[in-house]
Amino acid sequence: MISLTSGLNSLSQISQGAEAKFSRSVLEGFLNQEGLPRNLRRYISSLVKRMRRGKMINLKHVKGRVIASVDGVETYRKKYLPEEFFEKVLQGLIDSHSQIAVHRNSETNEVEYFEVYRRLVVISIITDRGPIPMAWAFQESDAKTQFLDWINAGKDSSKMPNATKSSIEKLKQEGELTVLKKLLSDLELEYKRRMPFEVLIGDGLYDKATILEAADKYKIALIAVHKDEKRTLRQEASDDFSTRQPDGSWAENATQYEGWLGIYEDDNLNLKNKKIKIVRVTRNSKKVGFIDNYFYCSNHNFITPRFVEWCRHYRWKEENGFNAWSNQWNLLKHEFHHTHAAADSMIGLIFTGIILVENYRKGNLNRGKSSTKQTRMTLALFFREIIKSIPFNDRAGFLNVLSNFLGPPLTSE
Image (cartoon, rainbow, N blue to C red; front, side, top):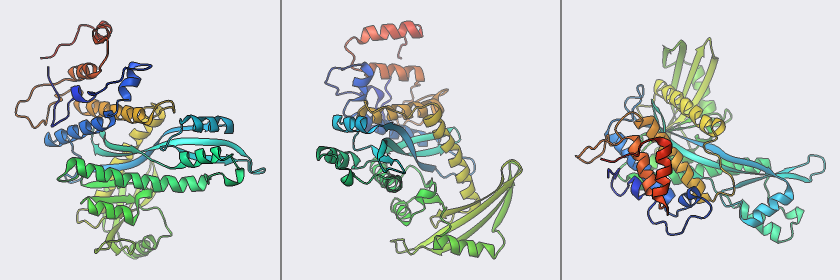
């Protein structure tokens, strides 16, 4: 049988080791296997390494550099009336990956409902074919423990955990930054010699000295939208740019661009070299009008206004893709009766499918493989391996049903 082995990873090995019988469904048992989330991450990393060797990761306008973006995406949000919420907490269906907001009546200050949601932080390599989601993790909080202790202590309203809208927003932002740092650390361990990308771009949440420090630690460049007009750095750069002509101007796709760049010192940086770049890019077109953006960037020679604008453009396209997956197709949504491990595994399977379909739907899955023997692997054989990896009691019967649905049985070479 053809294998997709790369190092220790192969599709036929991803789910090995399941000992418990499936409970309510084959899918539920498959997703709840203990090592599945980890093995899916390792398999995706093997795909990324293979695609880099096969020179499949490229962007036309960014000087041959590999660009990744980071973003948070909401995977679940639901409102609960108080008694229903208390029951869910006691049942353990609201776990440490849940964020909780309390909504009160503005006049009586009585609790009207609780809102529970989950957020996923994803790092994706950006390509002309679409994003390659390569690292992900859910935000964590201690809200579950706080509310469980409060409920068991008698639900004294004066001692309810602080979960106002403003405090939750702060926790959300801090949690997203914490998850990013963990993801970068995990990627360094997985890829060992160097990170699989050279530039990380994010929205206005990431224009922080602590994130630039992390980027410097892992030898990557940071580009983050710089939104806070009150920050001293932003004011200094704005005053500087207003006194001089743009450093460059260009036109593309019926849009006129102008760019400014300045090097400044960020005293919040806990680095020996505190120099950073602030980039300003304006764009003007009949279709969209005038837009003015500032960016907080690492101080690297290749960081120019035009380079930054292309990275912003690619990230915008990638962000639209994630919004479609989450909001239109509901691919990243899940309910609380799923365990965290099952939800994590489902995300991994979805990302694996997206990567393979976007990058290999018409080609050889083994392109870029380090082995000298290049055996052709198609998506049909790939899904055949997934089926074979399921420790299903009546595998023959299951394959029979699938064969009748798909047509003649698939064969391996």
